[in-house]
Image 1: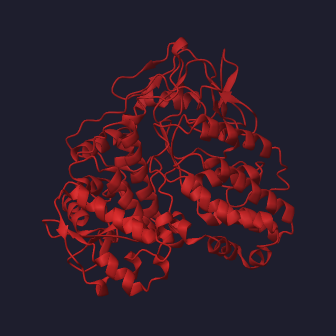
Image 2: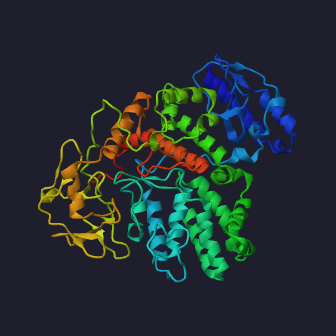
Image 3: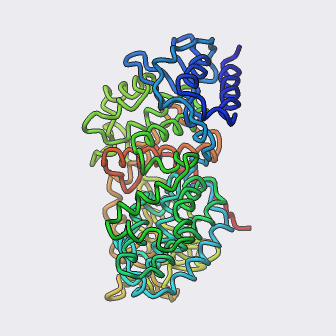
Length: 550
């Protein structure tokens, strides 16, 4: 029997048994016996079980552990009963865990957020921005937003970022440019991709609990309702849906019982966070593993990465190339990997190709310096024609000019002013524009356009003229300009060439999610310009637009 038939047949059989209402009531030893009886073994001697969370587990012969790992569907197999007594409880399906929403691993680069979803978020944002900042002072998100931004705006942002599986966004995505005027500082990344951090649930909880402690229960209720409204909108996109459903489930009880969290809030924010998590049914537990069990969450993201790389001839070797980007100064990473993936990773480690994201300069000897090519169509969002810029002033950058972004600088070339590209660097000169700074705001006027850009938000505005000219004088820094080419070399060397845009977006999202999950486990730094392997896929995606002009 071909392996895809064997694995698929076992999977179908186990799903049918677990769906039986009597399954949760069976004693654990009986459930273990049923699962163990359906183990499979490949010619290499690898043993596989279809178990908890409706996922496959691979037995490690070295230490007897079972690792989350998708099976090789193109290998021949045979039945291999496994002693039920040695199965750990964590791999035995409980029942509700099989009902988890699978979602999507795609990042928000390539396939855009649906226009309908974006429009609903923008309408919600405009309604909530009118709230008084005195009623909704910022707390957890005050490093991101300007001081006079109401917490209702921060609640919308935090909900979007917490619910996103992999919050890597096209720099031109209307969903994030809507927040440009509220930002205190630049978003991580560049004009191509914004590699955004995923906030912990505690940040959202803090917005509500600090209002409760201050005695402003109506304000706390409004913030919780804003999170619920945002999550409800996000349900329409599979990249948000699993966590959006989990957040709705946690927040909605407080809307029905406004004083439900009062006592917990008097203790501390962590007590409120735990109260929210306690409301989650088991069927939604996997969506919140990032909060409840970061190590298991990391293992699930590695599983997702391997599944996203299923189009390659050797998914383990391809996945190892992405894992090699993670900082691992304590040598902990191999212990989280199955033996096949661990061998591939250790090959890269012996070659000195691991922990690359921790390096300050990463250009290998013998490779020429080269910057990513500019894309002249990178204008602002089509409906607005601009990137939002100067916080809370309504100023914006270069509407209806055909302007496009300059790599690494946040500047924009103006085709009708004689702007031109500088060969070999990807930078652009802006001769004859006479751009000048506006005192005290950091914004910059562009004569003849009547518009302004903000120094503080690269990718959302136009920097000082001196900054715009810097790439012409000095060229881009090698550690930044060379990175996409260096990354692409290693990614392509691992056989990672996605067959289409959907597959590339899935790999990019899964790889970025792995990096974020590893950061939650170890505290490792998440690079502002993305992890090497994921960033190498960007130029495979940005060459195609979802909003081509007609």
